[in-house]
Length: 457
Ligand code: SF4
Picture 1 (cartoon, rainbow, N blue to C red):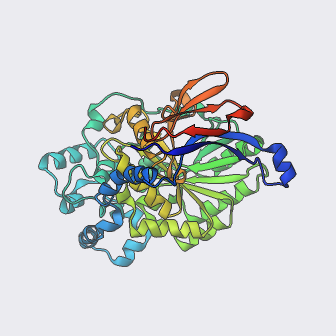
Picture 2 (picture 1 turned 90 degrees about the horizontal axis):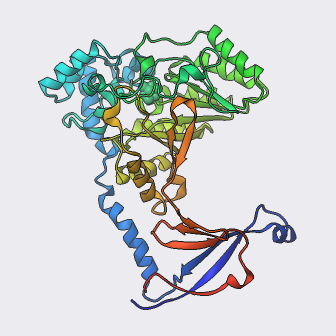
Picture 3 (picture 1 turned 135 degrees about the vertical axis):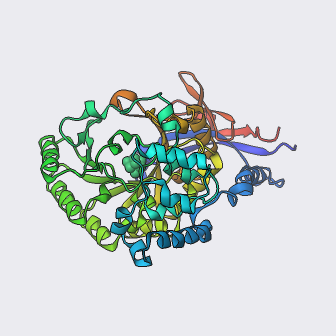
C-alpha cells in the first residue's frame, strides 16, 4: 500500500462555553493522537470504515424485529381472541390483558407447536412455579420455534428446578432494607418496591422469589412508612419506584405516590422501573401519561431484551411516553440464547434509539437460583461491548454492569482500552485495535508536528 501523509494533532476542548479569553485560560488538553489523512486519493481510510460496517449490514435484516413479524403475531392474536372469547376492544384494555394473563399450558398449547414432553414439563412446573404472560405478549411468541428468544423468556423450563446453583436473593435486598418496601444500596438514592405483581413473570428475574408468593400490592400505610424514611433522610435525592412492576398500580395510586414524593423537598427526581411498555404496552394510556407529565422530572427505565419485542404497540407506548416528556432508558439483561450476540444486540440498540429510548444498562445476569441456563460469561458481555464501541454511536451504547453480591452495588465493565501506562503517558487501544500514546497531562510544546500514518504501512 502507498504511504500517505498524515499529521499529529493536539485537540483542545473547552471546559465550558465562555468568552474567548476565559476559554484560553481554561482550555485543557484532551487528546494527542495520530490521525491518518482522509484526503488521500486512495480513499483508504473511508474504505476501511465501509468494511467495518459491512459485517453488520450483511446480517442486519436477518435479525428479526417484532414489527416485521406482524403477520404471525396478528394471526396469533386472532386465535387467542377466539380461544378466550374476547374482542379487539378487550385486547386494547390493559385491565383485561392483566386479568386474562395465561398462567397454564392449556391455551398456549393451542397456539404454539410444542412437543408433548415440553407440555407435560410446563404442566408439572405450573404446580411449583408462578408464571404468567399477558395475551398480548403470548401472541408474539414464535408458534413453531422452541428456542424463540421470546419463548425462552416466557415459558418455564425444567432447568429452573433441576439446577440448584445460585441464590434466591442475589443482591441481598433483605439485608439492605432499612424499612418495609425500601432497599438502599447507595448514598443518595434508594428503591421503593410497591408491588410484587408483574404482567409477565420473566423466567430469569432477579426477584423471582417474590413472584412465587401471593400477588400483592403494598398498602398505603406501608408506602407511608417508606415515604417517612425518605423524608427523614435528606440525602436521598433520587427515588426509584419499582416492584414487581409499579405500572400495575392503579392510576390513582401512582398519582398519589408521585405527589407525595413531590412534596418531599430533597427528592429531586423520580424514576420508574417497568417492563410494561414491552410486555403490556396497552398500559401506557393517555391518562397515565398525563399523570406522569404532572410530576416531572420523571425518568422511566424499561427492559427490551430482543428486537422481537419492538412491535407497533410497544413503539406506540414509547412514543406516548416520550411525547409526554418522560426521559426513557432501557436496561437489558444479557441472556444466553436471547441476546448474547453482537449483531442482535446492535439491532436492538439501534431500534431503541428510533423509539427515543436511550440504552442505559446491559446487566450481566445475576446468579439467581433457577436461572443459570440464561447465564453467559462476562467474557461474552465484554465481547459485545467491544464490538459496539466505534462501530456505532456512543448514544447507542449502554453501560455493561455487574451487580455485586451482598448488595454492594453495580460495577461497570469495559473492554481493556488501557494497554500500558507510564508516569507521562497512557497507551490506549482504539476501537480498531491500534495502540495510540496520549500524554498524561499537557503535552510538551514540541509534540505538535508531522507524524507518519501507520494505517497502510
Ligand atoms: S417484569 Fe421485571 S420484575 Fe417483573 S418478572 Fe420481569 S424482570 Fe422480574
